[in-house]
Amino acid sequence: MKRAKAVSLYVAWAAVIAMIIIILGFSNQNGGDSVSISEKIVDKIISLLKLDDTIARNEVLMENRNYLFRKAMHFSEYFILTLLAFNALRFFKLNKTKASVFAMLIACLTAIIDELYQRTVPGRNSQIMDVLIDSSGALVAILICWLSVRRNIDNRTSA
Image (cartoon, rainbow, N blue to C red; front, side, top):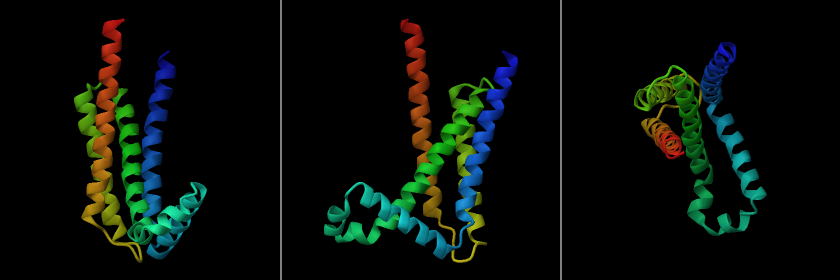
């Protein structure tokens, strides 16, 4: 049983590290390449969802679709990172408050480091707004973790 817990702990932290590497990997892309890739992805998603006509009728949405997609990805990446970090931290038997604080710290520090790193990549720049969006994704993840932990406690006490 101890071995299984150790393996789970290592897998949980490997997932956190992998997510950080993925985030920094996206930031390593040249600015022009990054925009081009995300434009192709967002247009493919719009096409798959058969939203071409709907978006084409909304000029503001049409012009800003890639920007909105990129910001949604910022939010999503840090949402996922925070869920993974919270899960990994719970292996240390931290209460939900401490696990939440440390998970937020991991996410926010990663966001800051990521934006500072982007200053060194051609065609990229750092934006405080991205750190705020990243932190918002992390905060929503923490709220979901709190609700999940509370639901589990409520289910155990009512059983």
